[in-house]
Length: 229
Picture 1 (cartoon, rainbow, N blue to C red):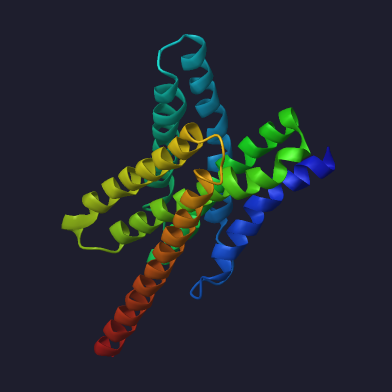
Picture 2: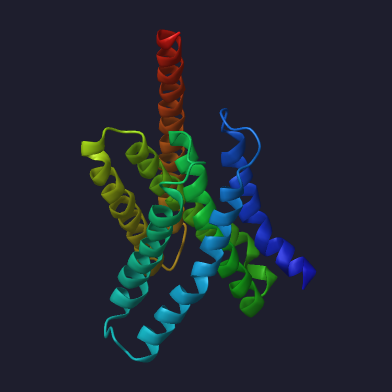
């Protein structure tokens, strides 16, 4: 059991560490980062319950709608809602790159619990592919969502709603594309793997852009402070 839990948790921890170590602006890890992870982990259970109820009741006659469209929307909506309610206005959200960290943290909380439950059912033989596909994809969805929350928080007030809207629209589209790649192709070499390569490129690009926004943010702060002096 200890080995299984370690294997299930390790991918999420490794991915979060990667994005955290890219942050040149933070000091000690914020308590909000841990809270965000916990929020994401707790979200797993109501999301899985809703998905189970809809499946058991046969709400969707079409399996594509059930397994691809509905699951993509509900998972990203709840993660977006947590970021909007619990993180967006928090004092520890200090620069645009923080959005990357909080978005990844919420998503990895969800992905880690989901991974534990999956490995408990299907065993360690699925651990590698789960780390590469579901856990990594959730982390990158969180990065993209967090990027737009970072833009919203540190942009002019008249554009903030647009960026908050893009935070969910962009991740739902990416999640739909990921789920479709799994649904349409039995061989992941032709479906999921090419999409994951794109997703890594896109997610790292957003992380780099957030880093540049943070540089500009602190540069503007320093310029403002010097002007006041």
